[in-house]
Image 1: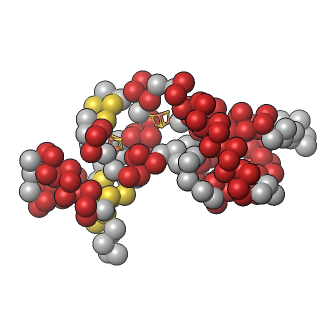
Image 2: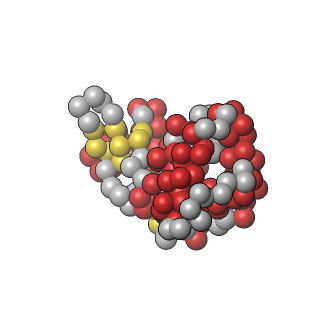
Length: 156
Ligand code: SF4
Ligand code: SF4
């Protein structure tokens, strides 16, 4: 069975599982797997994510970089009509040789990714699978989750 079809079937399977149990399972796997992956030799999330940023984060990083907010916004930010702000470059401006050059000052969205510690994982299956091919943490958590939950694809 093709992996894409298997993963589609797996997502359907996950939607039937108790949400709290699923959150616990992905959190536990992530705690084991994340330390085994060297993010500094990957950086794929920083090459593909659209990073949201809020006013406090923009002020904080502008200050750290010694820039006025005006200059900072001009260089790094795109603003939507609703006032939503995103980093205006993919890959991210601050990625230097697979590492974040502003690591201590990175944004909440960067810190949270791949977000296995955040409740209601079953509502984020689509976005999680968007990064399945490029994030080794997500790939390994999801493949191990199949084993933990004894998932068997019907047409395998
Ligand atoms: S701020 Fe740093 S961690 Fe966040 S996307 Fe940019 S390079 Fe990656
Ligand atoms: S894509 Fe995943 S493994 Fe790669 S740097 Fe980002 S969080 Fe780490």
